[in-house]
Amino acid sequence: MFFSEARARSRTWEASPSEHRMWVEVFKACDEDHKGYLSREDFKIAVVMLFGYKPSKIEVDSVMSSINPNTSGILLEGFLNIVRKKKEAQRYRNEVRHIFTAFDTYYRGFLTLEDFKKAFRQVAPKLPERTVLEVFSYYTLLVRMRVMEDDGELSSALTTDRFILVTMAGVLFPLYPSPRQILPP
Image (cartoon, rainbow, N blue to C red; front, side):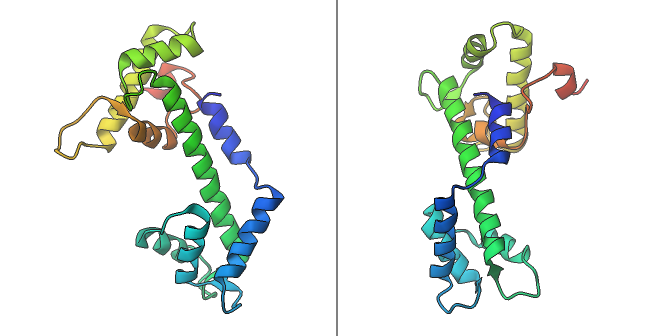
């Protein structure tokens, strides 16, 4: 599966009936007072139950600011929508990580230009090497624009997290139809 397929699939993913029931049960369990909505604290507990992590203040603020101001919290439908979107993003991130792992044949945690060339020779043997070089250059350019090392130095290596960051930002979807359509003149 390649990038464009992963992105298209994540948009059409639907929860199974059993997942949907579980989400409703989590909502009910977290709505202890049977108010019909989840408060800020209730929502945090629900995220821990479903995703295994405590959401940051910024994440909770973002969710709470997006709800209807006439309600005191997150209603069931809103909660289900939030969970569905988070599950889609989680699934997509896992698919991108899988693609990165397939490219990272030496399990170093980053991709070099040679790794990129080798991967593209396997999945798109007729793609000109120049195009592969432009794709890699574009990825590393975006990484340099977005991410700096802790010590302030730039790195051209594509680590797993950087690959996911750039890929999930919508870069190269659909996969590189033409260098002229993506790269500035």
